[in-house]
Amino acid sequence: MQCPKCHSGALQPTKLEHGLSAMGCNTCEGALVALLYYRDWVERTPLDLQQPQDDQESSTPLQALIGTTEETNSAMSCPKCTRLMLKFRISGESDNKLDLCSFCDEAWLDKGEWQLLKMLELNRKMPLVFSEQWQTKLRKQATQDARDNRLLQYVTETELAKAKEFKQWVSEHPNKERLLFYVNQN
Image: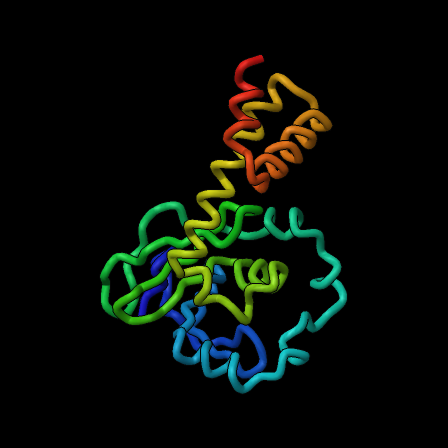
């Protein structure tokens, strides 16, 4: 199988973790992970053996780790079946996306994305990233972040925090319609 990202060489057997095999590219350092093998690894590997192996990895700040990951922006073809792989955003903290061939049930991880999953404590929950609920949550968060940033053009961080607190209070109040009517009338 050829690397779906750099197309420069054949994928070689590699290990992401002890007991978790993948097919890796020596050039771009990406890896193709069979979700069948991944699920088996999660089931048979105790949680304490899946924690970061060295202190350097566990002490790396998330933003520094994000800066070392790579992201494939263009669509990729599955190296097994040549169908297009779908992209799924990992988190709101990074722009990285995992590529999934839903036909072969294989995921492509670009360089550094396995470490990113570990840092975000998603290494045991990778299939969650491919769920509609996860992607919907990320889209809602992105929308809320955009609203916050637009409001921050006119108010301070402290005022934004007060507005959020008020919004939460109103949303839970049994007479929220009357409160909102009152606020809008002034």
